[in-house]
Image (cartoon, rainbow, N blue to C red; front, top):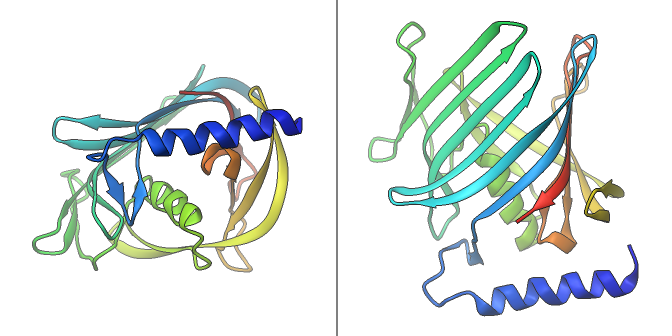
Length: 237
């Protein structure tokens, strides 16, 4: 990306922060704004499918919602987390997930009771309840907390996730910086890899662009059966 464009992006980002109203919500000292990001999606299910995904952070009457909706012919994915921002960080209130591939559906729904520090499944045929510590997240809201931690310059990127009746640890390793080419241009992005252990055949990489205030510009997930799913940024509002 030409230096003049890079300079303009940095100036615009700085100006947006200065223009935030005094009442703008903050989380861990970081101003938070709604956004809508559109991605080109690729699904490798043994055959290739192309589609589009929309990731959106919205301020609702009842709080905030982070959502991801992706579709490509015979495959679709819908994921959302209702949450609030506290001085400590992101606090989820409920989470839902639905994936459909070749007619096969997977569904999850969680609720968070912070008064009693419990997360529970809302799917009646698969009930569970889990004690959770302060700071626990779901499988979508952690990505928002991860972005805030990158903006804050945190070195340790580790998160407790309520999932399938267990409290799992998601740990991310920095793999340096890498250029990511998108429809908005080429960005020098921070590359992270989820640490799943040395023997895991599943892999997840996420790229965040500092020039876009650490927006997610690329995601790649490789499953143990070799199937892959990827997102690359194409539009940001």
